Image (cartoon, rainbow, N blue to C red; front, side, top):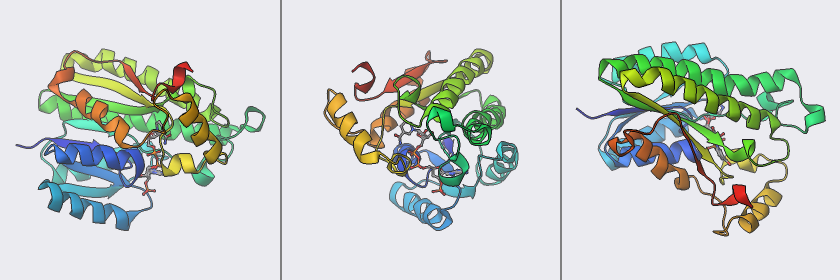
Length: 254
Ligand SMILES: NC(=O)c1ccc[n+]([C@@H]2O[C@H](COP(=O)([O-])OP(=O)(O)OC[C@H]3O[C@@H](n4cnc5c(N)ncnc54)[C@H](OP(=O)(O)O)[C@@H]3O)[C@@H](O)[C@H]2O)c1
């Protein structure tokens, strides 16, 4: 029986690249979108055709983490099992006003939204995934993180703090889910060229700085994170849990 990945926010950017990597390996994909329904359904059809797997898109708003419960019930109707869960989706635009800002302009509401979308969504999604994984003897849970908690990044205090928090939550989940043969890890990326980064007001500056700072002299691409996320899902990583793996093109040490 083929295995199933549940991943949030796979319509574009890093989530899309990760879903494609798993699909290429023959894994069925249950993935979420928020606003891009048409794009999500087109991707599901494309992945089914291209990789001969089952793929289905579901709507999810990570600002309402409790709705993960209903989402997983829908996934139960369509897929036999859940083997991997990747918490990837991130909010942008209006919901991060007051959260994505210089320190003196931070506001509780924007900061809370980022915390909800990053940490609380991970918690509820991972709980629901773990309940299913337990039934089939184990699984692998991965949260996306970013090096904005290691390197000063203008306007990024809200995201950086929430990424710190989710990395700590990953360790607690790993400590408690290990006895069920469920491993939990985070993959922390340096700046990657996606819509989220293009939304930075100083995108061109960030890009130029990354290219200068990286010993590899280039910006990160969504595909740069996929190999590690896939590796964490495989038996090759069978004794790897509670860790954050940093993939930053060498930028954090400069
Ligand atoms: N880009 C970077 O530099 C970078 C670096 C390291 C780590 N990361 C992390 O990698 C992950 C993905 O980032 P990305 O750059 O690929 O993001 P992105 O290109 O902005 O894509 C965001 C995804 O999240 C979905 N989404 C947006 N708002 C949502 C909401 N309210 N509820 C549910 N889903 C929502 C979007 O769906 P729709 O298309 O349907 O709106 C989309 O699929 C994030 O956790 C981010 O922090 C990013």
